Amino acid sequence: MNTIRAIIFDLDGVICFTDQYHYQAWKEMADAEGIYFDETINGRLRGVSRMESLDIILEKASREYTQEEKEQLAARKNESYVRLLEKMSPDDLSQEVKKTLEILRQRGYKLAIGSSSKNTKKILTQIGLNGYFDAISDGTNITKSKPDPEVFLRAAEFLGEKPEDCYVVEDAYAGIDAAKSAGMQAVGIGIAAGYAAADVKIQSFGELLTLGA
Ligand code: BG6
Ligand code: MG
Image (tube, helix red, strand yellow):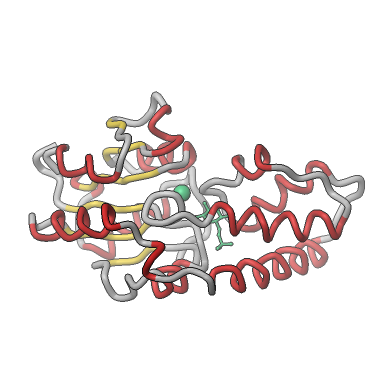
């Protein structure tokens, strides 16, 4: 653990909370299509890419959708989602997260984002963290989504660090699996604090300061 040089943070559900906005935007799309969708199904979308999320939602659809239709639905959802993101501001970054990041940085750790979201930069800008991280690996630079390790391996590469020297902080089971396949130490928070595959489980973001991290 003492060799840890970098910490890669998932964004949604770790640094800030966008679940509700994803839910509202998907719900709007699902209602318009007459597809059943609820918070439980929304929970299955955690950490999953936009198109894979849509496939999960379409499991409840009464007909098949063509690739072109799927792309239109995903685009429509994203338009609503981005509109909702406009409501986010630096107030959506908790003091606990802000302070903890500052202290980790003072302790010399490199800090990165490893997120499946193609809206990562937009969200970071909204909450006042644009330019804050040493590297950003997100939905715009990967071909395979979590649980594939690609997003975290790219983050380590951008930082110039070896995977075994990185911690990943994740709230999604798929993200913990991705971190483990990347050969990194996985810290589970939120729902993922109940996941056996996580190497370390924390109840609050501030606990990162007690990890020897
Ligand atoms: C992840 C979220 O961070 O990003 C998922 O946990 C979401 O729920 C995924 O589907 C993709 O997001 P976006 O912003 O590219 O549609
Ligand atoms: Mg997440």
